[in-house]
Length: 338
Ligand code: AHM
Ligand code: MG
Image 1 (spheres, rainbow, N blue to C red):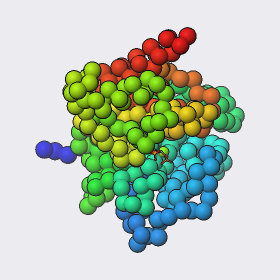
Image 2: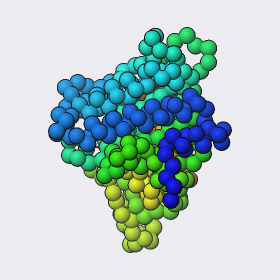
Image 3: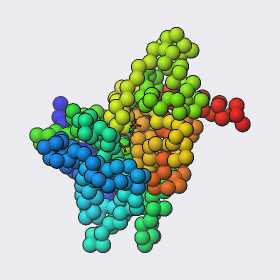
Image 4: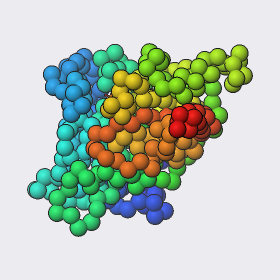
């Protein structure tokens, strides 16, 4: 079989009218940066990259050395190409403008440079998640408010998993495609075109340690899955939890399943655990493009009007039939209390 490189794929997407030259360049640059992150991750202890950086990010979380390194790699790679107006990162308080020395482009890039930080030091898969928006025209200076666009406005989203293989999964709103890094040649090669998530599944992903803090509809849903063939669902379910969203979502995009990080009593004030702009929106775009669904338990994630760059939301995504059930349970519960 003739292999198709990422570059060739991007040229074909341009010819099909799905993307323009600037977006094509942006994806090439992000992919190149992620190759460098992949090398840094793979060095592990030998590269001196494990452990804490000794700093906190905007959300007060301790940054790992690899969080900081990955953020720097993405910023540096994206500064000079002329394809971006600004970047925003989970690891930075404010958006980063393009330095004056370089031309500005028409896109905004948002990223979680290294997702699954708690897995870095234990050699379990981690990843990069990114989202691309158009920059509004006719503005002198890019501000945080210009990034606050609904997920439906994304022109591209993707993630890279640094696992046994390094994989890039990408959407421009015309299906979801997977590229595997060929380490010998240093290029991403198309490994799956048009990935689809089956509507039905028997697998769920959730951090069960938080169960006692969940809302009633979430307790009901997971309780029914745990009851399996002896409960109302009449069949058994299995559970997986990597604690790296990229790895859990990649399993779902590959073979189906649901991923849930719900509201719980301890994180109610902050809105949830996962970040809307860097995690929930890009993953929702990919999952919907693969035929799945993504909600907050109550409404479509991509329909939310963001109110802050670092806003957090509950996340329910994956196989459509299951997301429909758990979303219905939340809405029924709200109705009965109204
Ligand atoms: P991070 O961006 O700081 O790494 O946090 C996000 C991660 C997700 O990858 C993962 O799904 C979740 O946090 C795991 O949370 P927990 O440790 O509570 O299970
Ligand atoms: Mg993250």
